[in-house]
Image (tube, rainbow, N blue to C red):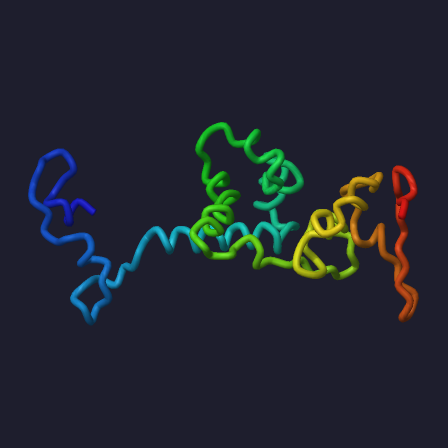
Length: 173
């Protein structure tokens, strides 16, 4: 970087090359570096994706021990957990940043149910276009165990699927 600034950070010298020219592709006379902001956002998004897809990896277990079982991704605890700048804070909030830029990052992920033990029935997006707690909020309010997994709420015997509910009180209407 000091090359582009004329030799060192302390002296005020003329830059040898305009930064916008450095970012250009080779065929336009640049160094084909690309926009570093976009590359950084892609990398942060990849780490977020890896946390959710590799929960048994050592690094994911370390993150869970520091920030809780959801890694700080649940909005209620994330602001409380990150009082100062950390790289993990950037990973947690990259989805919100990209969503604000018009890139639907957060809504692009759907959990694969598998046996249902690691997917929250109400709080994960696993069926339909959203979370069941948002779609069926009144039923969610009646749920006794809001963190129940799909495995705890749905049972299947052959083609028959039945719900196993645990309501605070029976739903009315």
